[in-house]
Image (cartoon, rainbow, N blue to C red; front, side):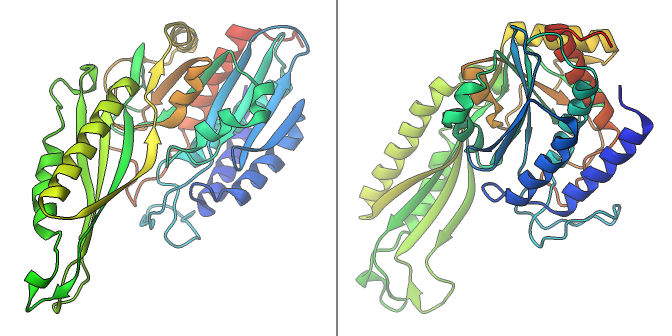
Length: 388
């Protein structure tokens, strides 16, 4: 159980994290702050440097039983915060915790306090503070890290706040929760020329004009992500030539985000996007190069893990249902489900709450006791408790 003093301290800690955001792959200060917060809880051990700046706190009962991992994210976003409603604004220009990862970390620390005071009777609890969720690289790096082999969870759970869902309500289901996605950077190369003599060069302008709607048309959004064949292509950026009036362009870039309801369908969509691009490039006499960024696996809830979470929420009176899921948005937590029974829970901060990744978003502190209580009940149901 969390005391009033706990909630005051945890809220203050969350605000401190909010002031010092670090983006994917740069979470050194955040990781050190988390380690210092974990030490008073006396976990069996603290593992650092997992997949980058990842931190794992292990609470080992010493008795055979399942290993249950609870995950939060360390990273923030490259977004300038604009929020006159809070006093704990980001102190780092161009970076902010406008996805709520500061709140997710704080929920995990709240769980750590409860487990340290009343240890589990068997098995292990792992608090996993994962780096680089926002670019899709962190979970893969963590599970590939040799040190993760010693952790090897049987179950994995995560909570992500999700604006638009009523406050305190959890949206979850068996099966797909978050779509797979992949960022495809396309570079088209031609030849510059004087703007007065464009025929002396090879411009990508008309190719880009043809490519953008053609890529968009590869999507099939009918039925949304509940349809296994759901596909979506979103053009997120395009650039042609230099910002000048005297040069006909010789290079262009197009950024496209590909999204599917299943990992198995991503390869075919990517192949289609590449083939289409190469065909257009050939038509206009252009070279083409591809780069893959922000590759997220689909997040899929295991039926047993889902059942454990639902039982826990029912026991403590947290309302839940399937409204709002699955989501088009991606989340790299799905990688933990490759080797563990995993479940993602989407916790509502309110139907009118500012959206994720908006410059005026802030995590509601009142979610801290709700999320940590769900986690604690899951741990108790799976691992029991030592009678004090």
